[in-house]
Picture 1 (cartoon, rainbow, N blue to C red):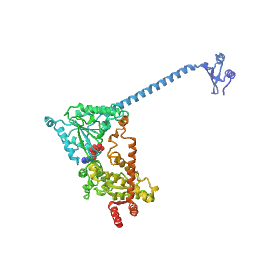
Picture 2: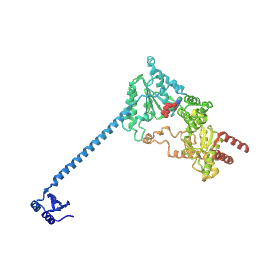
Picture 3: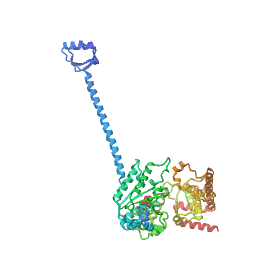
Picture 4: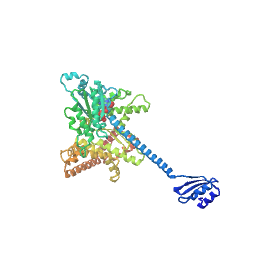
Length: 575
Ligand code: ATP
């Protein structure tokens, strides 16, 4: 407890206090009692009395100036703060210099284009592309022994453009050229050119060509050239500066190296229609080689190449699998055998049999499959959808061949599967007739038609949504692109609709609002005609549908032959 001033004087006189510390500017003393206690007691300003009395009673008195302590504290605090400031500043400088370093090394790293070190590939590894390889042999000759061609005054192309759908072997072919000629192969994907830092892409192009020239003769392979080689000025608001700068740099580099310099640039794309004309003009990518999806014979050859490293059981006939895989690319076929090998390994088998290839084919075509839903009512509804679509496909002239149907569904899908093998000739020729498309629409509406007949208009489900999307796709193409509608033989939509930016900037309208309404009317009319057609085909087949639905629910998968036989019996019994 704090003592009073008068009590303090008394305690000094009474010898109770052993020391006093005077703090003048705070006007207080800290006293220490004989008992060991300490107390802080206020005193008067400029108090002389306390000095006198403590001297008189011989109590040691020290004067403490807290300002000097304060100064020391201030000094220390100041020093501490400056230290913190200096430390944080150096931390920030270190961090930003690290960032700059990493950006620089990123730019440097990203500019580095390495020579491909993967194992040598030759034309023997490329199957079913005989004409294409023949065309490219001249380049191999030039790379191997340029003198022969140069002496004859021949000029080899600076750039070769390989055009074709994904997985058709464009990269493989480019690698095989390098492999045959035994020259370095520099490969880069064009999308790697374009980075978040402006100017990096152009720098990379420069570096790529610098490395290539140093290793001449060599092949420079640019995959997905369309990602930088799109026509310039077509984006919304003008375009992508970085991409265009990169493309300009590529054009400059290609102009820069001399004819017969030994560097051959091979670019690949599956969108030749979007390429800038400057890229394809003579002196740049002036040689174009189109690679299409392999036909039956080519598929057989590709399967044979990939089967070289896989132990197939004797019963596997690769030509049968070539028949079953129209529309498959080389990459798909490679994947097919690979998946089959994985299935065989899972079963601890030493060879791959047809059943593994069959399973792999399903997975390649439809992705992973999951079990049918267990709810009986919903399963029944799905079974009617599948049977409806299947019967329509069998009742209408269709080039696509029915393989089987199944209640198993692909992951993420609601309904089961109707397996068709697409018509080989249609795929190969790329020509599709008006009736082929219309029949496709009617087949797509088979599921909806069956539901309408069996469950009634209000009880149909959205289970066939994917089919309905196809209906829109095909009827839209019929009207707007193929001239297959009463609106006349006119393609209202052109394929440059990908250049949305340019169209918007030019405010280009292909047709009037009145025509647009007519187009909608025609699309709806085709869909309605299709559903009526499908309903008509199925309306007298309800008994057959019931029978097949029960069979499907029971067995979960039915073969095409089984369904065709049942349909034939049913038709004959009605005659
Ligand atoms: P993308 O356009 O997607 O880049 P791509 O046309 O370049 O595809 P590749 O990468 O060359 O296709 O092919 C992928 C794989 O498919 C190859 O590694 C090869 O195993 C196989 N393949 C494709 N075509 C053939 C073929 N004609 N002969 C043998 N194998 C092929």
